[in-house]
Image 1 (cartoon, rainbow, N blue to C red):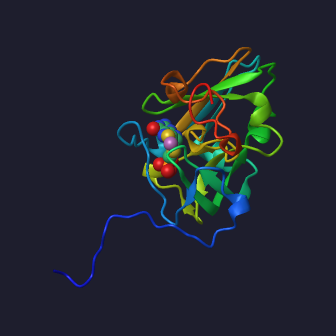
Image 2 (image 1 turned 135 degrees about the vertical axis):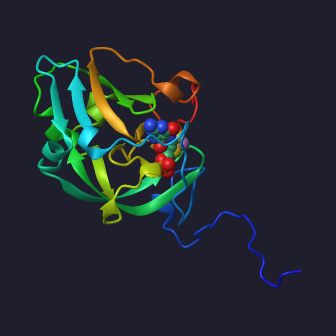
Length: 200
Ligand SMILES: Nc1nc2c(c(=O)[nH]1)N[C@H]1C(S)=C(S)[C@@H](COP(=O)(O)O)O[C@H]1N2
Ligand SMILES: [Mo]
C-alpha cells in the first residue's frame, strides 16, 4: 500500500471564526465548481451585458463594461451544498452602478446566463453595495468554470444566486422563480436562516 493516502476528503478548516460560518456549513480552502450544464465559452468580442425591462434598456460591450467604475471586494461565499469559502477576492461593477444607468421601476430581477441558467433576486437585495457583476477573481480574470468572463456575485445569499456567465438582467415588477428556485430550492436563500429549500 502506498504510504501516502490521498483520500478524497473535504478539507475542513477548524480554525475558522465560527461567527462567520452560517449554520450547517463547513469551511473549505478549495473552490468547488458547481454547474448545471457544460461551461459556455463566449469570446470577449461577442460578449455583451444587457439590462432589459427598463424604460431605457442598456447594453454594454466588453470594453464598455471594463470602462465602468469597478470595486475590489473581499467576501465570504456560502453554497447550499454546505461549503463556505472565506475571504474570497473579486473585482467587479456594483449593481448600483449598472442599474443607475437605466430608468426603471423594477422590484425584482431575473438574471439570464449563457447556457440558459436563470436566478431571481429582489432589487432591494442587489442595491446598496450588496451585489456585483464580477470579472476578476483572486487578481486574475475569472476562470470560465467559475463563470468567466463575468458572473453575478451576491454573497449574502446562497451562491446559486451568483449566476455564472451572466449576460442579462431582466427587470420585473413581480417575482419569477429561476432555475433552481423552480426545482425546490428556496426562493430567497438566506444562508444565516438556512433557507435551503422551499418551505425553509
Ligand atoms: N449559469 C450558472 N450559474 C450558476 C450555476 C449554474 O449551474 N449555472 N450554479 C450555481 C450554483 S448552485 C453555485 S453553488 C455556484 C457555484 O459557483 P462556482 O462553480 O464558481 O463554485 O454557481 C451558481 N451559478
Ligand atoms: Mo450551489
